[in-house]
Image (cartoon, rainbow, N blue to C red; front, side, top):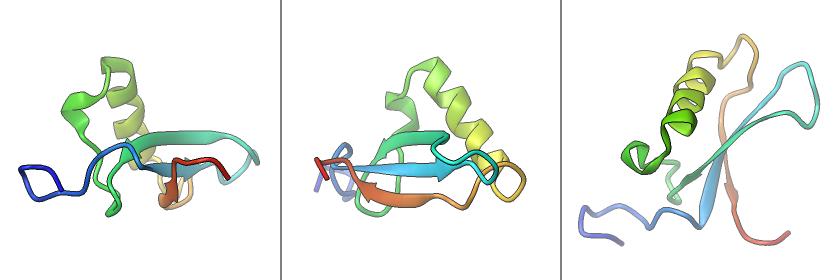
Length: 71
């Protein structure tokens, strides 16, 4: 846990998968609860994150938390 009481960012990723194009989507580092450190993202990644959230149900499936480790 970090000082804010959240799980460490980086061991997991929050994945938004395309509803129409298998293998496409967005992934962002997150903690085990799916919380993304928005301030830690680059400007482009932050824009992509907000876009992905807005497109859930339209172009992207609801996000899923996945392990960022090797499969």
